[in-house]
Length: 113
Length: 112
Image (tube, rainbow over all chains, first blue to last red; front, side, top):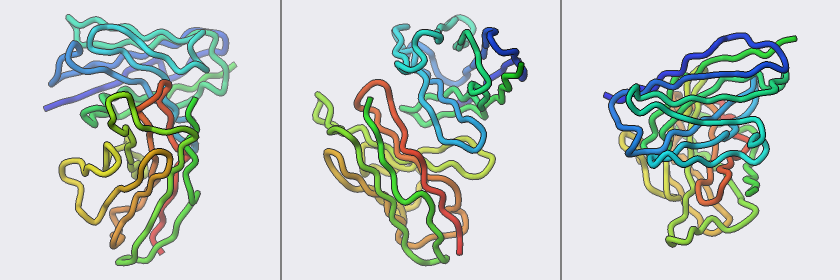
């Protein structure tokens, strides 16, 4: 059974760095890419980036300067790191294997001054 | 970036009636492989998105055949032949041909 679960800080101060972890079970991170998608309150979905099975990455150009996606295959974990947070980064952050239609439940992150 | 223009913004449909959602892309979604990476997803209230259709018209496992997808190049449509109560939520198109991936702005389906 495939599971993807995001864990994060809940509340982050403006200008600080966000770190969210996606823990995967039921498939290998070396076989499929893992995406990060976020959704601001009451808004639509925004694709953030992907780490492919070979470890390479692609990012949303609008976030590229602030965003990093990495992984630890031994722990089946994927990491999202984003710096210089602003209040409009407040959102639910999802990890997903879109190819297989596996999604986490999402983690709400509030950015506050 | 590819812009996905999704219409209508909202839709109110009676049970048993059909529904249709349009998604137009700012450039062709035919990839170098010849495949068209256009997906439709449904996000029910309080839930994560779930894919209904991939590669324009292929139904995901467990998705009833009341749902169908069609289209080509830049013009795509999701149709529900007979709306049921469980279909309420926000529908999104998602293109996976060009990076960055981009979503439509969503269509909220309400039951009349």
